[in-house]
Length: 554
Picture 1: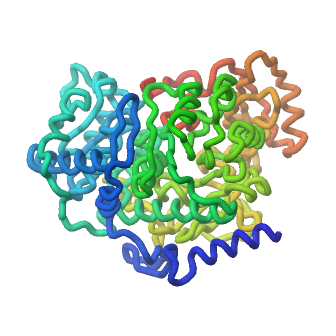
Picture 2 (picture 1 turned 90 degrees about the vertical axis):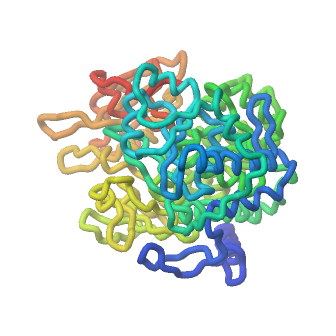
Picture 3 (picture 1 turned 30 degrees about the vertical axis):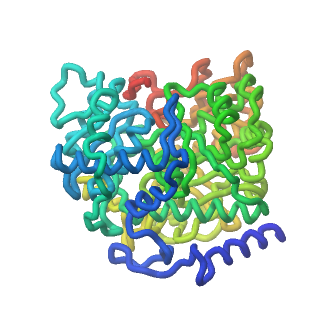
């Protein structure tokens, strides 16, 4: 295909010897792998460079407008307060518990600038989960906002607490003349701990290094420049992004707090519950040029008719991550954002692999709309069978990834780390997929696979088909016990408002494109949305009515 060849040539030139994205082989934690040759020695280097943006606006939050100079000054003051007032040293943990806010971002940069480890706590956690993470990570200090800290009322918290609304100003004004720390930092020093979503069981703390996060920044820079060259467009003179993903999640932290600062981009942060109309107003008023909403957020946005009353033409790029995006939703996004349709992107990644293993975007997304794309530079990707052997194209298996962006470990969990990080530092992702013409086609999480007799059923395949039905808003497919087959396929379906669904008709719809054993034999029609965690993943174990939602509504 001529257009694909042109894209491949652009990528080759971007990574050619002498270019900014040139790659080389280097030893990472004892294993040889591809890395970017021109890379920052630590995250602190991006912070240091950001000071050059001076009075350029960085963070917009409600009625606050914080410049890069303001941010830098606040960060170095907070960093010094952490060291002198709370005794935080290199390698110590500092927990952050809060909704997205300037205080969250300032705290993060202050913590990592002195070689300490930022612990992002899930803002939807209940008191039990918060206390679990404190016991697990054992931070020197917790910085939190009132709304989340009130969940701990009457409970003895084992660490000192800084309340963002009450005490944070004492940190930002601690030393107006403070300078950036010169604490020696190594690429492979830990920078942050982010907890996995915890859709089942206790969450695990994913430890990411400075190298891993720097690599994610450079990979995203590569994608941005590649996309512009493919489209033949210039970078907007005043780029601005809207942050709606939580900072305690890998994609929110990487894209919303690290990449944007490293690129000198204005970041507009929404407060409170997501409001599609308010988001549309901000897009128009603040000149938003790029947005990376979660699946649930973009679904709500494109359905909100009043959002279309605002000028959305300034958005030039829009991206989404996680599961394959239904084709109807892709079309709705292109219709909603007329100047972003050619750059619409779908990424594959996880907290464990740096959030950016593969990307499908633009024309390639139109060619293969259910693919998560091709691997990024420095990312090696293999599909392996149950015996650990690499398989050929169009064969299902588990995704294994090796990259400098892969996590250091699961915090304080050596057995789980050994299971995930196999020989050669290949990460066993637990995701099942196949490669089709070099493009990654995700099937399901390994734990979600339904074993019906001698056949494997990948829930995602059935979900994609059901969501293509014009009356279906969202769905989740799970396995239920069966005396005859071991498991049967059950579909939980939410219809569009005002639509009456018929399960016999839905079964016929699925059977038109999928094998008979994949057709659900049990159905549940719901009028309320599916239960999701803080990063938008469906909590399938809650579809059993005997379970209670462990997350605190924000």
